Image 1 (cartoon, each protein chain N blue to C red):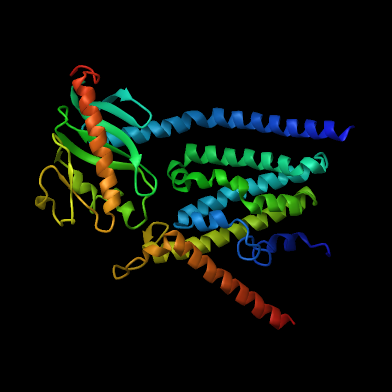
Image 2: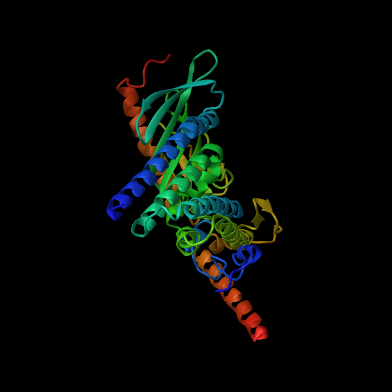
Length: 204
Length: 197
């Protein structure tokens, strides 16, 4: 693989290697908390916080960690940052912390984070790992934002709690329920694949 | 260095540093989290027993707490009862306020619930559900009105309304209230709520 420029390292997280649409990682929070835009944003930010700091720590101590215990060490590092994020949210944003419920502690097992440590931060410099984590975080936040916007607008007629569709609109309750998450994600994944195929054909 | 020794040292160090960081974070946030919880309780008591200036916990259990609500002159103006119970999908946490004789429910508020959005979750909605819980006579067990009625006048004083499409959630809320009312009444009869200060 040819060395990528720093810019490419960032941009790849947005589309080409988007964690949700291209790598299909982190599906649990993607499906579970995108019933309202505010929850999606909060989950995106919390995950980014954990991902960026874990990448920084893992890439800076990668030489010290023996290969045999690397996964255990990564998990402890990730769990530390997740607990910090969880406590911080409970202290300063109690309503959001309540809405996200058990999904904040579950960031520990979000495959995006462990995946990036294993696939990238443990093999690259601190600077590159930081850029990679930033790119992946942005891609994840954008994906959650898209999914939660569609679900909140169709499911409740609101965006960030503000009424955007008129009185005539009867909310599609299914969009807020788990089934709506699967339907929306399925359609979006199909669209992402379609766009990818179209652009590849043009390139060929 | 021996590989095993290195593995043990690294993992121990990672664990220790992580533990250290977490205890600092806990120190910084513990007070605030406790404060948030208290504030939430305080607001709920103010809502279910209007005019509360001060309150004390008379009975405190894990899933059931009775607060005595008092006015400026420290007169007892009612009880606020905090209770938890199973809902349709998950635990429902609620609080309701009564008069000092436990004969009338002022109002009810839902603190936490994970009922179906758009159906059972209407238990948090005043227009659809909570207003039918205001000023209910609770000398006897409360009952559920099925099918739902449109106006409060159609209900008898000890009846509460159902949410159309969410009978189970409505019933569960009623069960939690009836059960905790029974508990409070027997506590009061045993004199465990303290004197009428």
